[in-house]
Length: 148
Image 1 (spheres, rainbow, N blue to C red):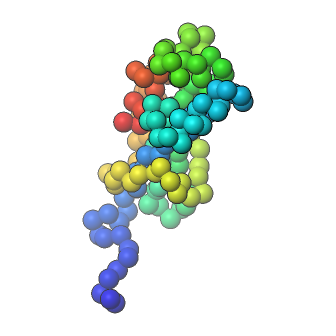
Image 2: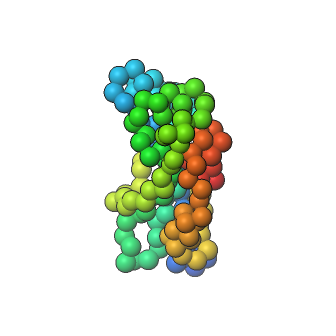
């Protein structure tokens, strides 16, 4: 037993960890929120929001960083109806935003380890975000495409 080491191997030491996570889509209170929550609890993949999480290997960066793409106003009733119906988000609401935020710890559920990144994954994610087209079309150019 003492021969087992629970540390990163030399092949993965110093490499950022990359994860994908899914969360429930947000909607306005009322029937839209109830429907979204029910669909999420039943694991209807089309009604979940996907995002990329990077856990940097640097001891200076202790928090994981989330990168995702979502509607500018995800709780707007018309955005929720477009998501539920599979239609394009109305042009007036059709812009998406790329968001970045920090997490203290990784989610406990619906979070999957994808692999290790070569080089600085956070810098690469920021570079990718600068080229990402923010024209949002649910089912065609949305958080799933961004995460892929």
